[in-house]
Length: 487
Ligand code: NAD
Image (cartoon, rainbow, N blue to C red):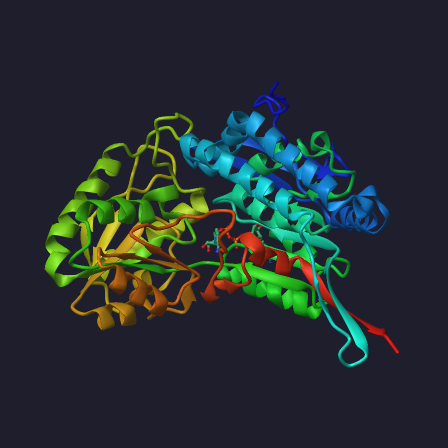
């Protein structure tokens, strides 16, 4: 029988510490629904004292609590139960996720089973974390162990909070660490709703805690002397600060999942229908607020006119429904997350319009809420801000190319390297180009796909380290060599 513990009338607006909700004593967090700018809630986030207290509890749980002596199998049982509880409470968790972020409810619902599957995947890993050994040919028997790091903190962005929660906490817990997550102040309710299931799943107190709050809370965690690792998902701007704080404090381990300006390459032989479908997903999902959004589109000359006409048609269909209620299950395109992001994206659009041809979009939406329909700019200059900088909104820059070499050169002309997409029916070309485009995830006739076994992360200014799969295990364990003198 499904355990329904999350209820939308009980807003989870407290800190989750030591297996219970506690009032925060830090700065006020104000939550606003971006569809109409209405206030959802105001509550106190974590203060420095709250962070210190939570870290001490986490450290104690790591060193001497029951978690430290549970077997891998027992940890796996808890992670599996947690996954099931998330599934049992999916619709309410999805509602909390949608209401603050403006992400369509249907999309948040779609996400929940994928979040649960990450916990299930790492439940399977919990009894398979192993090391190596080397024979005593030199008189010493060598054992190499993978040991947990200690207190691991995750700081997350708002645009996929539940994914990031799972990607950070599941491998960390499977490896035997204790975890503190700080969700974005823009959309913490989904994460806190999931947190309310931690005790029921069987995690001992202090093992898995959640501290809502703003950038100040993230900064305190990043420079905390008792935190062994920070895993961050957010902007490159903030990532640099976190790395700096880690360096200046205790040299804690850091992994950074940062921004992007990812390319999509459409070759003459591409399936027009598939390429239009995926290029639309690549920029319209979350109204372009996706790290891996394919925001620079390069189309081969032979197909360019036909392709752009079809893409324009696809964007027109979205524009017609602009302003739809993201909390309705039929809505597929929502508003931007808040006024700050809305003003930022509008600023890029207005500046772009001064020098670059607009194929579709760009007008202001005046009926309320932070909505912006998809925009296509054609042939921006190589120096244009809209072409160079991450906008994190539904703004696409299009240029054409003649040859494969030119396409690769255009794709790699960026400091970022998060993702990329290649549209062609020639498998040899697809694999050749995929090997040359700099990016952590390359889609062939698809984009923005993730799965628990497959690593996710960036090259260059898109960060370093990998989440998901076996790759994440390396980032949540420390390697120890033990030498035994056999003589
Ligand atoms: P952001 O960098 O503004 O905030 C992310 C998190 O960092 C929030 O929890 C915030 O409170 C915290 N933070 C802010 N200042 C901090 C500080 N000084 N020290 C520590 N923490 C601090 O990013 P955002 O607006 O929430 O998200 C959008 C950005 O995230 C985009 O750049 C996007 O590309 C990136 N992103 C990357 C990935 C990825 O997997 N690579 C995924 C999603 C989003």
